[in-house]
Length: 314
Image 1: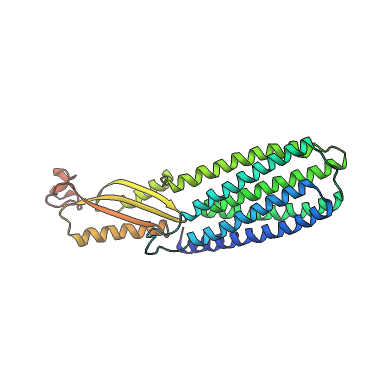
Image 2: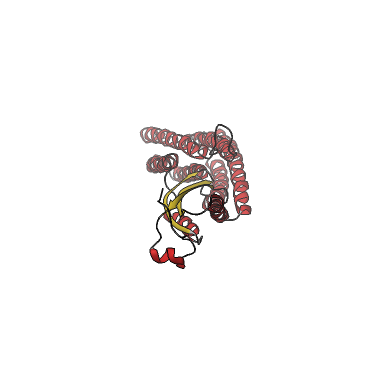
């Protein structure tokens, strides 16, 4: 990924968070109108769900913008973990929506009600459904490109909103046929799915906050880039983690003990530049160890990385 691609990712993150808030405001408006026209309790539940989405999207908007800030005096590794904190906050909203939906559906099972002005309610809900689907498609593309935990959590909000809208539409259609208990039965199953999904978001956010290692493929690539430098004798103690959009990479290199400091530094700078090219924006720390890994055959002049004699390994 090039530096231009990284900047494009940042632009997409800002754009998708703004689109999320705008969509939430639109959904709240149209659902409020639909509830006023029909008086349907299912539409009121969907409206409350969208209000929670708006609160979560607002948190996400602030968190993503904050996480993209550079390092400062008090946060030398940047602010990337704000994304994971936003994911935890949104999971709480998702779980709250699920509990509300479960309580609501149980009440509807016990107390079914007749619905009014069904055609108007159906028209508004179909519009809301189309708008939400368009946003989720956009969010999924951004997540595939950036890997953002916060956007992934926000997308889950709107997936549940799609499910809520489908259940509401189904309830309105079935109500026309006189089957009033279909809505709460379907909604109860969705509430359980929402709780499960919230648990997955919490797990992923916690893994980021606990500094889980990067994927094995990325670690293999780091190792190959480091060892491609001809004068490197060894590579060990690789440690990696992710903070927002920043990959943090730390490892040790074994270099011939006789090398002057400026040569060892130049070797590390070349490796850093290659890693920065492969992982734009990465925070890279390389520790240099004097190596004593050369065989007599190598020290005899058959390996340019080995001098006449290598000192002890630090």
